Amino acid sequence: MTLPFQKFDGAGNDFVLIDARTTPFNLSAKQIARICHRRFGVGADGLMALLPATDGYHFRMAYYNSDGLPASMCGNGARCISVFAYLLGASAMSPNLHFLADDGPHHAQVLKWDDHLQQGVVQVSMCDVEASSVRPVLGGYLLNTGVPHLVVEVDDVESIDVPSRGRVLRFDPALGAEGANVNFVQRMADGSLRIRTYERGVEDETFACGTGVTAASIVTGIHTIHAVGGSFEVAYTTTPSAYTQVMLTGPVQRNFLGNLYL
Image (cartoon, rainbow, N blue to C red; front, side, top):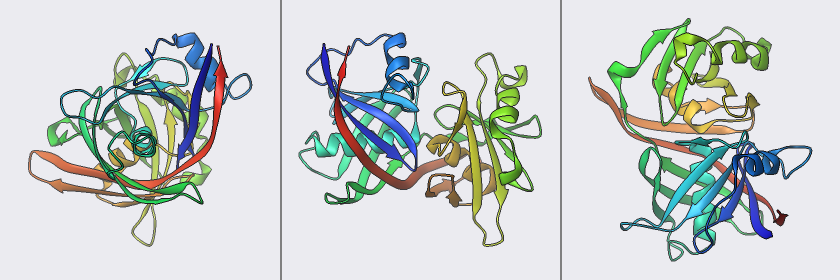
């Protein structure tokens, strides 16, 4: 079986994307994990399937971590699959796209795309966050921005052993039965934030995490955030009860196209 794919990344957070609008998507967790393996496969933090549109949406997004298991949302993945869908003509080449993920409806806008460089800037809406759901735990704050995140402020984010410390916190019982992604953040003198993230499902540090960047912005109130792989802007409206109209903006690039042999 030959399966075409495209490889994208959002600030170094990389994904294998498959157009499954006309062909049933039935890859097993084992197959997805092998495709994402950086020695035996394409190599990626996750895999996404572009599924047929329903109820007026341009497409549905199915996301799987590199361990082959599904997750409800991925902010960088959502931005990448929006460009993927746009370039495939799913929105009749409109830069404004409406889609469904497992955590609900989203809107994306391709703000810029350079066909020569195969890169651009994409904004995506994220889920609302109830203020009461942001709770202190393990020296940081736990919240859900599509998937659960722990945000911990540190004095020097570059000195943190993210794989080791993140792994310990990620499995702490205080974060629930399935654990959470762990973000270490540092406030910078220029008013921005630096972030490094340990992602569950990948079980390692990733170069960027869109839901993690969003969580860090909500916890700290800082809107310009620098991840290892690139920089982001996060905007939202704050009310006494919730963070609404949450928007994540950052870079996307298409790396290459290929075929999977399964």
